[in-house]
Image 1: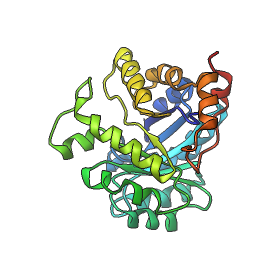
Image 2 (image 1 turned 30 degrees about the vertical axis):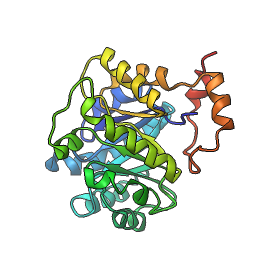
Image 3 (image 1 turned 45 degrees about the vertical axis):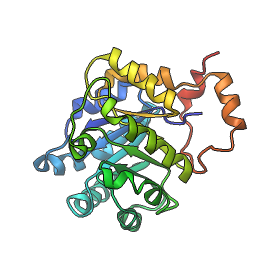
Image 4 (image 1 turned 135 degrees about the vertical axis):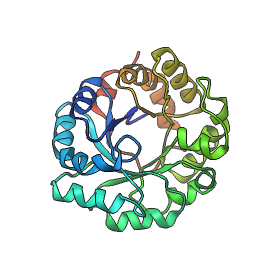
Length: 257
């Protein structure tokens, strides 16, 4: 059973985007301090983090943040969250390609916050299981799309054939390591394509998906809301992740008959 179906990434320094995300119905909302927030705007985004987290939680969403690697602005990101009394439920970090990065993140992160490393390169993909097992606080991993296709030397397409092997292997690695796998986002604007991409991910075995457009949240949630039969099968499966996040209350309400 998917516990957090939709993970919506939001520009960190844009209050209007924060409000739109709160209305989207996404299960997890991620304050994005890397690609969506230019370096000059990151101090402002950190200042807005506490208000954003309160807003999202008030709408029933899990509040998450994605910081830069600790080798870059990640240390400043963490310090800014602390300075603004902003405590996320989930801490993601971009461009993780080695378990040592996860161990450093664990040492620097607030106690009790879940860790979700982001896999964005071929090198990282080949070390997915090691990265997943680097800390007991890792509950899930996310596979990226845009940086991954650049690293592979190809281009992103609506059909996603260029990422087919990556997405399949990543899921298998996460299942074997006992953590959840978050599928890469569909980065085009059309809802029809987002729906088709989510259905493909579910067919592979994914239970949750990243997204970058709030208008896609309802479609993604519909795809990943389990039927009663799927819940029964999942309960009988020996391959469920051993470290799951809290189930989102909206998922139980939307179970399809």
